[in-house]
Length: 298
Image (cartoon, rainbow, N blue to C red; front, side, top):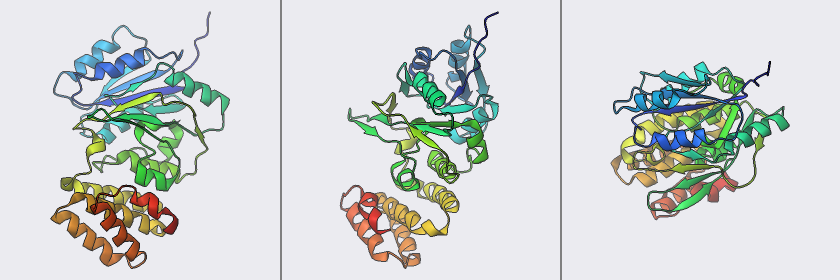
């Protein structure tokens, strides 16, 4: 009897009201050259027929495709629902409107095999903006890069399932930056990290409803809640990092809520107050990359 290899990795994809676009992601999964992997699709209580699209795609495929339903709203809740069902050593989270090259999972599996001590494997990704612009966003396993550049964004890495669980899994209590918040907890465990070099094999398509476009004035309270959680993980020695992130949010908000946040931060940040003010003025004037410019000083 031929022995079927046990999958090393599960791809978890949360889906909410993506009936019209999730097919592109599912087609990319179908074209993977990896011989053996599992897929968990989590419908986040969609109302547009997404669940039917997922079930139809899963029908006739191997037993390694599972469709779940998560009633609690939010990507973090759906991702955690998927993580709870994973029974492979590694987990890769992916989004329902993005694509991966056919060799993406195979290259990850090969890296897992060739680096048996690795706990986290990352690689750069390609961002596509609605106006046609395209840029490469890096993976970097550092707390500073994760906080200011989102380098532990969901599609930029996979990790051992045990590491995700040891870090506490996803936090459904924050409505944005749940991937950066989880990234902070993962990195605080000092995992062994391997980065795959070469051209990106993941394409991320940004839209008006993308979570990546969520840094708006109306979301200041939500963003602040996420930063509180990240600050708790990093500890008080990194309070200046959190203050700088808040200052950049305030500068980009350009409304009364942003001004209130600015005064709140400045009044509590005796250390580096001049640097924070400079970052605010620079960002308000249209400058980009204040965190990178100030990195040597904080």
